[in-house]
Image (cartoon, helix red, strand yellow):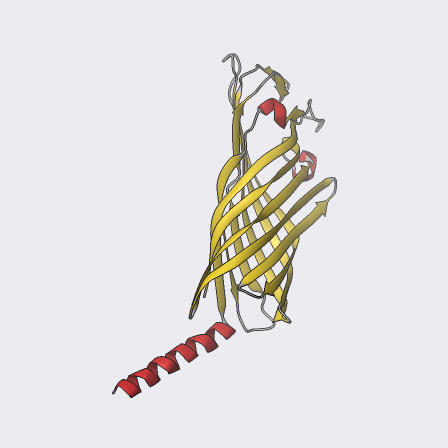
Length: 258
């Protein structure tokens, strides 16, 4: 009986391993220590920007925000694979001096909050799948940015600002990964788009380490650096605000592979 049971267990594990070669699932998440630099400007009725508001005036600190990602790979060649990402991006502070927004002058110590939460829906093809320790993915990304800007005048003389926009941004997507000995991986992901006078760049590089190899689940840690640039002309997207900002910082998280 024990030999028969052992045989069933071995067959089951082999079946799980074979299934993993056909269908693969990975997910991860952690904290991104992001920092913002650059400027934003509101537009008048003719689409002309008012004075730029520098991030140093808004006095935003570095923030620790959550991120998560997951992807599914399948064995059907003609169908793209799927990757989903979410990053919470939010900054708040009290201005160090006056600034102009929508033609109104807001006083020093005006409290503002800028949100750029991001959802990425990526359809990609796997050109190399750990071939000679190398993985290459190419595809298209639909980045959905939930943008919000709130401000409360420091002197209380002006009406509070509360604006929100949803920006769908199509981007090219590429991923390159190298599997190194000792359960170490090096990975880079790049996304890019250019439309009229606007440009968006989003890239990261990371190192991950697999702690356990418990068939069929691997658990690991990841750490890296992520950079984003949003050069947005409000007229290109029919919105009331333009932005030329950069967001970057280190991130740390955990990874699970099935």
